[in-house]
Image (cartoon, rainbow, N blue to C red):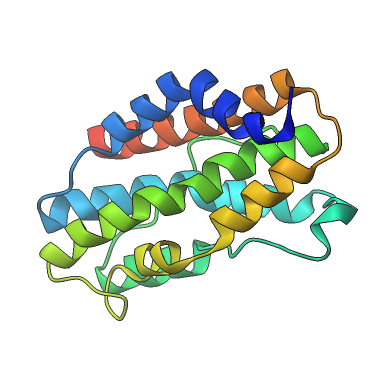
Length: 183
């Protein structure tokens, strides 16, 4: 497998899980639905970001770390008086390159969807300065392209394990969004 095909393999083999997360997020066309989205995002993203800070990072990343958005999510929740709920469950991720790359595929790929979600948030009167700072930060981020360069240049990896880690991250996201929206 060529390095450049890794992204497309991941997209193909996680498309079902990705679609399930998109469905669980739904469209937030009211502030109340947006608040539920923030609760789900918090329950998913903050524990995952915390877990990633504990993992070893590859030398070939040359010190690069993605911009985590947990602090911005909390700021947005505070802006909108959103109740912080406990995470859905502990996230079990191995501390290896494949797991890191699989999870980063999900987290960094979310910046693409954030561009669309940010437009929806602005339609609700939210902005980078109030209630949607995490979406603005993601929409402006260049981390996705940087991540793809690292994915392409990574040494040989067991792609089944990268896919598995991505599927776990998508499943945790889906659970977090469904539990908060159905609550």
